[in-house]
Image (cartoon, rainbow, N blue to C red; front, side, top):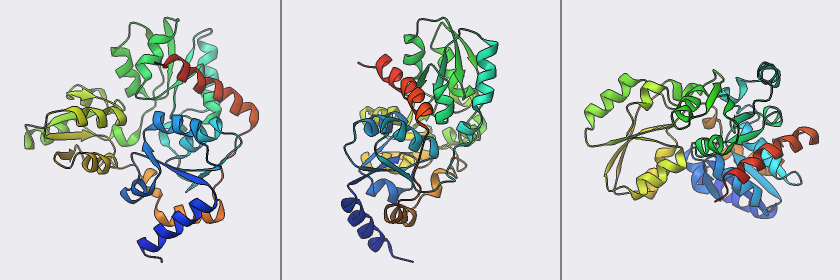
Length: 305
């Protein structure tokens, strides 16, 4: 097994050889974040993918993120490090299940969280992320909206809009593990800390939060806050970036259970192998890609400042 310095040197050499760019989600291992050309949340990764001039995009995240990069960049090679790094939240709704929901609610638009498969996006009216879900919903003219697939994000959005949401009962099992009892205990241990919760957390946890925010919004809030201590209610990978960007502040994970096993499947060895062997390439049929592209592009249009 190669040591870390050899792995990093090999990755950099192959990246240059293939004119590749490395994108990493905020939940990736620290060493993946450190070598990436760009680290961000789902919305930021989508925007970066859309604007990338690289020939090869290596997506260090889970499968739906790599699909999104391919949807936006059909002529480029998109690689994912582990073909089994799926997302249980994305997998909880299938095209068949969504088609049934659409038939039961004729004429009602579908807002699909970006944490969905390309095939599900292709059936949807518009996509959203946790950072812009409220904005997307409020920008639509319809008063009734199907919201898929995360029920906790749906709950959060419902609190911010006058519209009626038909919320699909899916959830992120990593965020769903966090309990109000755990949060209260950590708050007792760190009474001066501000609690930031991701909107994928269950409603009882959201109710305890001073701030409910996506990962990008958490980073911005902490950067601008005069507070010195924070309890973080999202996947543990974000703490690495938070600490790097705010070395004078302290961060406490709300629960040791906040670890996404699929995000943690990626490592430097797999990154080197992906660049060396072009594994695993993400491919999407053109009809699905075009329909999914329209849903993603509409998100960009509705949220354009």
